[in-house]
Image (cartoon, rainbow, N blue to C red; front, side, top):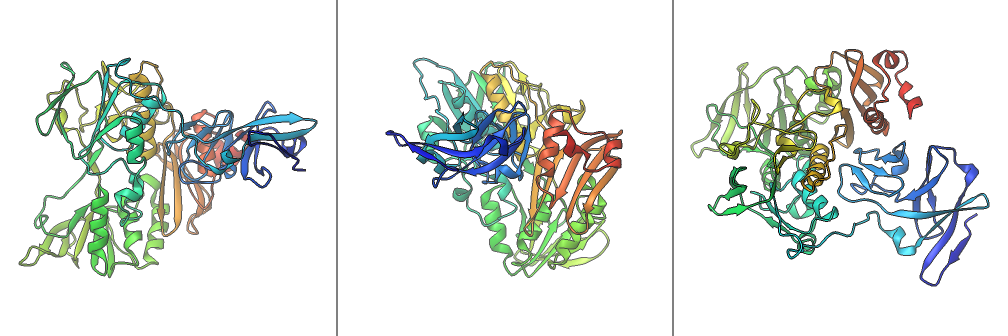
Length: 538
């Protein structure tokens, strides 16, 4: 079938399918001669399009993802791509994917492209250069995490020619933060999201180890730690969060860690090898670290205040199954308790800890995974009113005040999934989306935030996906085998499915995310009757 035509400019035209091999709203990975493969899609109207076959985030096969309207959603982490343009429209990831010309002739589908276009999984856009003679504005970004990078990246993609300054207190250029707790030994360089050359080529000034200590939205100035002052035209606040620490007896002992940076992760990995490790906190950070250290440390113990890990987020049944998986790898659990005090030797090196139930646990290393607080202390006196817990309220455009925007962990926002409730969600995908939307509105484009939260975790090679906003769920309905780690969980509140989680059932959560975004998810009553009824809605 694969007839091939070569033109003088190294373009190829290859027959890749027959029209009658595709139904409407169907996609398949097809070979383009001997040169590579693409994702061929037939939409609801019967029209064909072709895009790159892999997600630009971690390379997941998009043919295994979710096709909904004019978008395909990655089966692993939920990134969303336009099937007509290849543009990334929801995250994670930063890059779009290639799009290929499709030709229909005599009942056959042809792909026309340059051969080298089939060898790349990402499509880097043409980015606007810094042109101070045409645009003298200064856009200042406080922070160097995913929201900050997404904002800077989007500003150049959207044509901003002014000056972009990104100030971060960290040593490193922006990096892939979710990998920190899953691969503690990863270096900052190996996690880097954009190269130093990228920032140079796009004239995005990244000031590392440069902490902002003050902001004045009336005078439009930021004050740096060295007391220098920078005047801005528009500012994004994206400072992320700080790990909580414990203020109890012995908490200053050497060997007690939190995880925030690659340097933290490297120190934990180095100090934990062959040692007795205790992890305080049985949520995602703590459990991922426990999984990473299980075959490296002498012993790993997890201290949790709830009966099972993840009880508040995933429910006790899933929590118990994940605890059992950890226990099968030698991890010990101490539930419904907390740390009362730490103990150290004469050199102040950690030797153990006593729990509130009186149990003593020997420990050389302790990692605190007990939550985070928003890094907004520097906003005192800025003219910005913070929420009760220190978050920055924003509107649907990520706007705080005139020419002031906020994104990521510190932002308090509302979307359809939160049912009108102002929330802060510390997810990587959310941070990237926030930065993208903020950038567009800094440029006056008036684009509202519209997304569905998507989260993932991985422990012992097993992945869990989660979408929606499940706070306050009053019921969980399951499909599959929870104890066997192959299931879909539906979180229900007021007869509405508000979130879903899965293990071993990809791409279920990505498909459900697409339905939630389009407000097409079946009701709880429908799910109770047929837990897979949502498949008929795609």
